[in-house]
Amino acid sequence: MKPEEFDIVRLVRALQEHALPVGAEGTVVMDYTQYPPEDAPASYEVEFTNADHETLAVVTVREEDLQVINRRGLSDPTPERR
Image (cartoon, rainbow, N blue to C red):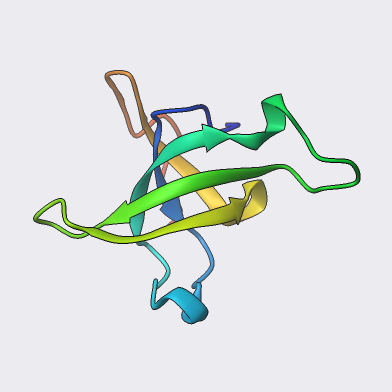
């Protein structure tokens, strides 16, 4: 599922340069696919938070590195791989 603004997403690839492990969760705050720069991959600005909702990082992330886990009341719209 393609992320949209305000979706809750989960990382499927660690972002070590930002100390974010696989499974880190955040909120899409900007969908750059709506205003794509020339020759740029689909990407999103995501605010990652901890369990206390404190911001850990705000990072531009490629679409293939994200899994949508909540969209406006729809919990886990894509089944988790086990």
